[in-house]
Length: 515
Image (tube, rainbow, N blue to C red; front, side, top):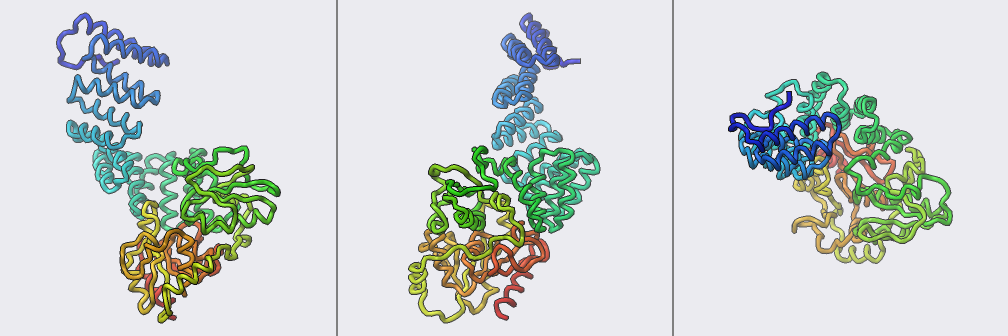
């Protein structure tokens, strides 16, 4: 039976109220019959006849939200709240509309208002967690998800939400049992299966991760995150044939949408390029651009005119490889284009065919200027980098406290290769304008020690002796169980043996440097 449009305990309906009730019930019937726009008109008429028709406001909001009109839904719910401010469900529905519309801060406020009226509202607790996560407030979100789970311990969705939050907090070991429990409660749960694959990959179990990504894809073949997760697992195992193929799924993932190719007809994926102008465009971080710019000379060798569109900080450094333009301006005319990280697939790159020779060179005059500035070498000169892009989701995992890194290299003359550092000994932040400057300074070092960041790629591309310090379950490009890199022959890799174990890595670094 359909609820009455008027609140319980209200006075006997007036003639306008009775007409509004009839319009409300007609709206319900029209909605059930699939006449959605007519139903919306009927609800709106009911509200016009009687603004206190609370359920008409609520159903109008529900109708708008079902049709993807989140802003209209929010206005309808606000109309109901104005008439019945103590209705927690209206505030909850408003919050859902705001969250759907992308306004997480306002959604948060509305969920909190709903919980103030009804502290045991399971949906409000759960969805407030989601609103907080949308604002990258993961630790706060966890508390509200856990409150929802206490109210409904058998909720597979809430278990998955908690586990997903733990993954964002870099706690995959805690996420695994929760995901296993969620899947036991709801076996056909692609999102949870995908998250379990991600947790296992972070725990350095790529083969187990692939199995769960496959289960997720069996239930939801179009799940881009699962295909992308499988690609990363395959690539870190060295299965380039399948890995690079699946890596194209990144374009269906919202995280990569901004850089997605927008001209598929001219997308190059292999084949003849002689006499053609091909644009190779950066798509992710600075290190990714440096790593995959190595393919530009290969295309030039095939007779192509290559245009590299790269981040402004890299333009001078990469200019010897090809015609260069920057990502903050439209590119010049071209016949074909290819994202930089699609080039290994286009070249059918295998582990044994990686173009691994050094392909960058610091400007000799800049190197000479740096040598003069640094003066006589009295001790071993070591260039260091302990952190990467702070906005990278994995940066907290791959960064090392600078004092710990410095302490592991006693007796050396240390030079900080990162431009964005505080004014401490060894910094050159005022003279490192771009990566060409960094390349010249790096070329004056006896050794480079870096975490997984663009400095490591720069050192490897220059062919300099480099030690890279890697987190447990490191990025796919460093493969697994190797102390060398087929991408950069001058590198040595030191890996964590457990989550967060930088102590073991730094102890190993001390032994390697002083042996």
